[in-house]
Image (tube, rainbow, N blue to C red; front, side, top):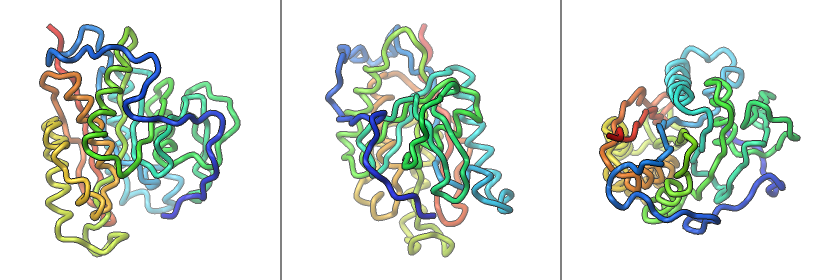
Amino acid sequence: MAGPARSGATRTVRPYTPGIQTGQRPNRYSNGQVACDTVIIRAVVVPHPPLLVPELVGGATVPTEAIRVASVTAARRLAEVAGDWVAVAADPAGPMVLDSSMRGSFAGYGVDVPISLESDGFSTPEPTMPLPALVAGWLRAEAGARRVRVRLVEPGLSTLDCRRAGADLADELAGPQSVGLLILGDGSTRHTERAPARPDERAGDFDASVATALATADPAALLALDADLAAELGAAGRAAWQVLAGVAVAVGGRWTGELLYSDQPFGVAYHVAVWDPPAIG
């Protein structure tokens, strides 16, 4: 589904450059264990297609119900432990950070479904809010979380830079306040004849490896995903997943994972997973 045309960034949007952070704390994760002040209390992985929003699919809610339920379930599990979220996604509008005060609408996708990145958002709606931010705001509301700040990275960000961005993010969020991490990204767009792009026989193995890595909370396996192959397969979620891997490596210890959904409806792969950091003690 084609998205709305984008204009320049508004004053509520600021650029983000991986590796250059103001007020950055020293690395607290070099001992390979969760630091005592680590506040990334849970991470969830969801896709961000417009079809998650019932109003946007009209009478086709049944074929999209499974992915919708899985995504909302994951978001609610995130909200159970943290009301404040940081979302990470890859989008051509990146790199930038969208403040939680922003509001937007799915009007560019066919129906004017308003969203807000925080529960008390009253700012003027941003007509060109990127799709991952819209979905992050929709999931925030569905889960009952307070706010979500959205960090967009470039889809073509290298694996090394994704890992560095994840380490920067883990370090930036170290402090006394619990934060949930929402990772948004889609798999290959080249599964089956229903796919929006020409089917590619490599897509099956690629997304199977993604599903296994997410199910087992294996950051090394996510970092091993080939960026060039992901681009050829239309798997735009690769960069966001590798930022998550960078977070997990920086925090250290053995994370645990649970795969809630992995399938290719309409020829596009979508994965939903929950990752928990190692317990302290």
